[in-house]
Image 1 (tube, protein in one colour):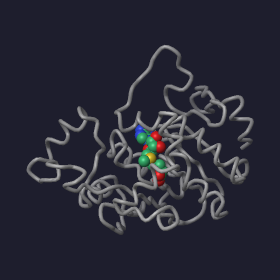
Image 2 (tube, rainbow, N blue to C red):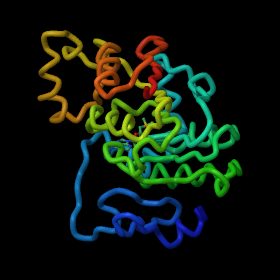
Image 3 (cartoon, rainbow, N blue to C red):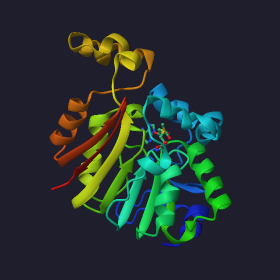
Image 4 (cartoon, protein in one colour):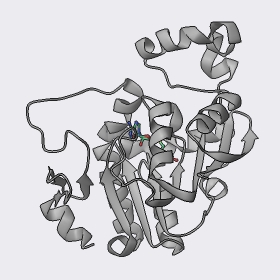
Length: 256
Ligand SMILES: C[S@@+](CC[C@H](N)C(=O)[O-])C[C@H]1O[C@@H](n2cnc3c(N)ncnc32)[C@H](O)[C@@H]1O
């Protein structure tokens, strides 16, 4: 693919004929791409990251702050998985996408996020670091609940510190399972639910209330480990393994 040309002029789906606009440095593959009148707001945990200020601050202190909850940092969280096509979903400013791309281990790396400003920030870092952008790294705007890839077409999916921000983790993981090839791997990190970050909702009997109050106060969706395992299993993913450090969890799953 000639990515710079696609970024300049957009892209037309050869199956459904829909045209997708390109907004300067990334390809916009959301359903609302190019729409002028209709607008739609996602939950605050998604909208927050669309802000230019949050995107700018993300790798300038915001992300480093996760260490206090047990996140070991970019180098230790980076887990190289089998080669082929890798999608770094909810890539933010691309701290892992850039690392995957420059590792040379993948035929293509797709840095995907819903936030236009995170993708622009990612592009700025790529330019500064001279990551081999045109060769194997594409920037795509898409919603995690509607991945713009054919079923069984992707070798690996990475989701760093993202599940707690997704509007519907079950729709998202079902989509991830759909697009992975048989044998493909899903690796993710997130914050586990603790009394500190989830308050009363970490008590079993009060958990159902999280579904009612959560969307109203727009808090992040934190889960306990068993819930994540259950969710992946119900989406058809197998071979669960995990590593936990305080409220940080890294887990991986495979499509059979
Ligand atoms: C905390 S950041 C994680 C960034 C990076 N992966 C990391 O490891 O630091 C969460 C990211 O999820 C993205 N996100 C939130 N809702 C999303 C959605 N519905 N679809 C795709 N990405 C979404 C945000 O834009 C944001 O960049």
